[in-house]
Amino acid sequence: MPAEAFKRGFPGKEDLAQDSLEKLIKLGYVQWHPTRGGMTYQISKEGRDLCRTLKEEGP
Image 1 (cartoon, one colour):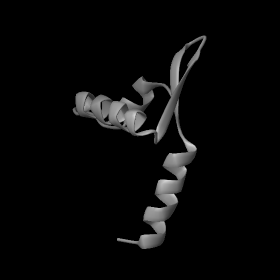
Image 2 (cartoon, helix red, strand yellow):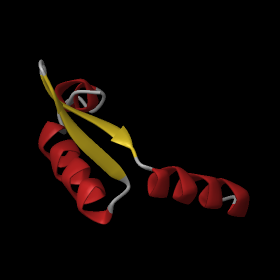
Image 3 (cartoon, one colour):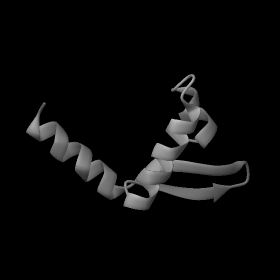
Image 4 (cartoon, one colour):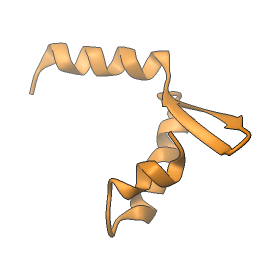
């Protein structure tokens, strides 16, 4: 998913969404890769594992 598409999900908070995306990349939960159309992002294996753990633990 391009960063612009991600940020559209947070109207009025695009800067916060961009900062959060950068933190997730630095933590290794999201990975980026270049394409002809620009950069795209996807959840990494570590990110999927974390989501599964959080889901199992519940609220």
